[in-house]
Structures are given as C-alpha cells and as structure tokens.
Length: 111
Image (cartoon, rainbow, N blue to C red; front, side, top):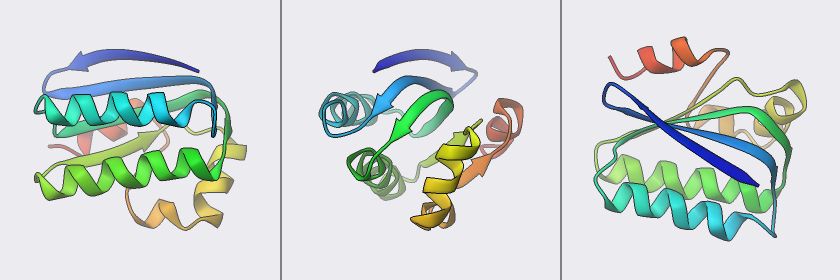
C-alpha cells in the first residue's frame, strides 16, 4: 500500500492506494499515529485508490478517529469506491466519522 500526503490549509490529506489489510495495517497505523503525535488534528483520508479494506484496515481508521477525538480533532473519509463504502456501512463505521463523496466536501467538515 502507498500513502501520499498533502496539506490543504490546516488539513492533512492522506491518499491510500492499494490494499489496507493485515499485511499493511501496521505501517498505516504507525503513520497515522506519527501525524497525530506531531500535532495534526484534522485528517482527511482519500480512499479513491483503495482496492481492498479488511477488518485490520477498519481498525486503523477506528484508532485514528479515537486518538483524534481525544485531542479535539476529527477524521473524515472521502471518495470511497462503492465496494469500500459498502464495507464501511456494513461495519457501521460510517456512523463514527464523516464519509464524503468528494475531497471538497470533506474539507468543509473542518470549517
């Protein structure tokens, strides 16, 4: 899995490409934790290039959302392909954080 990073105003935008599963979740979790430890409290994750999401990948999002909430921050997911969106909805994780259809809408969640 590849993680790309950019910053739009005060929001850190992460793009995930490939598979977020047991083999890649530890490195993703480490990167999310590093960013939060560095003071990032506004994270958007672009899922448009994510091919697969396992329960280990779901845990990455849950842990990041929990840590961000404790620091007054927020995690917003965006641009999920239908198959990924369905997994998030089945796991009821779409209720824990915002799931937006576009990056632009995701950024408005921090206004």
